[in-house]
Length: 342
Image 1 (cartoon, rainbow, N blue to C red):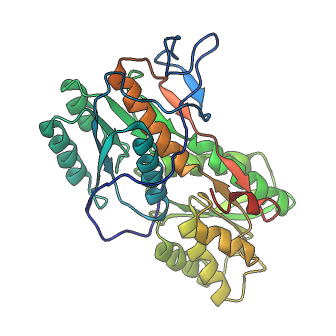
Image 2: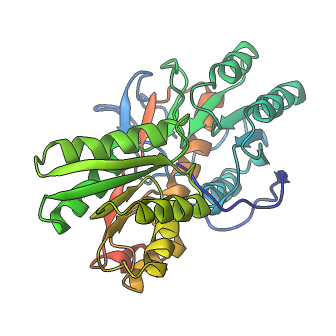
Image 3: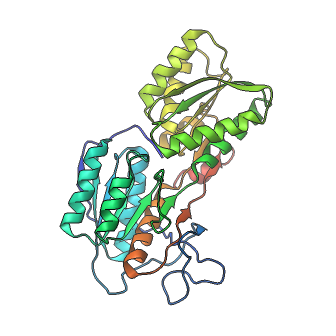
């Protein structure tokens, strides 16, 4: 969820290319897969993402789907790539725009999609606490709507969310760090944007694990808003405070990489364990170099592909589960090679 390295473009019309990633959610028990006549998962249900056949418009129409991103950084660009590839397989056209992290701009972009009469809309909300006006506008226009990657704070079960359980990312990350510390020590938390569900729940997952260990405690917590430079400056301040920090639980890889820069400059790389989330290329390179201790793989391309499948299914009139869960996976130096090309 997250995410610091912005691309220069504010809006990007995608000429679809590349190979596809299959991501149709599996059917509920007793149901079918989503491309035939069998039963679909009911709204309100949760299903786990699994590869399956591409979903195509039943009427053969070349659908126009608008996609509203908050920003196109290193991670979210991978989500967009997954959407591009899946849309090419399905024979539909995407228009992807970036709000450059401005909530009002994103609302205006969604309203533009509505006025253009697109056949479906996918949203990755900038502010998960302020997504309701977009939901209301799209549903009032009777346009199929799917949220991806960032779950709105309030969302009707009839509107699908394709993404991951953010609390699990924090739990996986902190459990691994705790094991490396022998379940004791002082923990600092680098939080993403506090207005976003991913930052809130990843932080909570981290704290839930810490609470299970009497000899561990949170001594520092600060929002770096997903940015590497913020992770760097915050960690520099923590180091200058003189407090002993044994591990940094970062909500994403970008802030974790910034923290590592500060620790390296202070000669403390070996003294502090650092964990991130996303398993970006930069993070895996840092892990390979013996710096980053832990990260958590978030299947960006799977989320993107699942979002495209889900909005096409909504267009087809098929039921889509309320939550299509794309599971997180722990990445360590021992298994990092498996994630190099994902």
